[in-house]
Image (cartoon, helix red, strand yellow):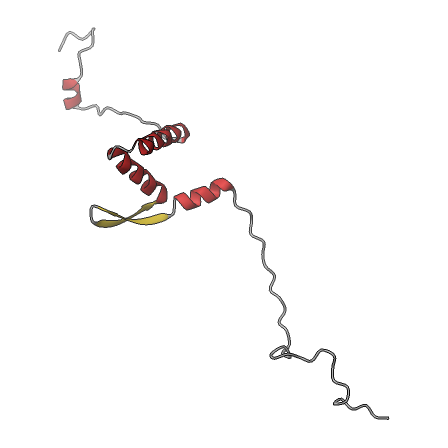
Length: 122
């Protein structure tokens, strides 16, 4: 008794293109989860193109948002003004740089400076 392949077809015949040898799957590296603050920073600091006075400029997204709020508040939009004020208050609390006024000490500023109570020469 001989076995003929044509009499006994395979149970699952190969379908078009599946008869090639398979490539091993590439391992996907898991991305390190990004913190919410890092995501906000990345999105808000991304450079955006904006046209100001007919000139195209690139500026961070957060600056573009603040500029649009400022424009709307100048037009009289109360909601935009309130949002801008809240944002400025929040930014002033969170910033590490503080406003610092330095007086240059030269002849011009000494001339403007009021005389000290103990100074009788001037």
